[in-house]
Image (cartoon, rainbow, N blue to C red):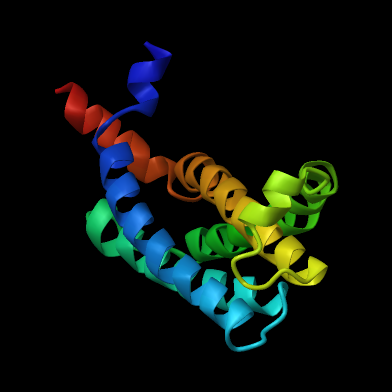
Length: 159
């Protein structure tokens, strides 16, 4: 029963919109880092600034169009994005980087922007950060920012 509550039409829409947003914004992040010389801290900020704006608009107008936006919801959205970003890029990514980049095969895989250690580490941390962020963001959006809207759809689907 709990799985059914997690897997519903909002999850499917979330995945479609999220995957498209993820591809476009993550590609921009790696382009900024590997070709334009942005740091591994600034490139993700651009990525998530743009991605968050796109995502909020998608939630507001596509996923949950019936409800109006409130100041409380906007503040929750901003807080959720900042918490997910901080945990993803300043906790999870550096910790995993210290462990995973010991393996030569992992270092080689993430050397697509250059074999310099800071490029490999940056690419690894941005990849891990993006994945962790996407996972945390889904649950944060669902249960913290838009929880009332998810409840609306759950009740509507149950009828």
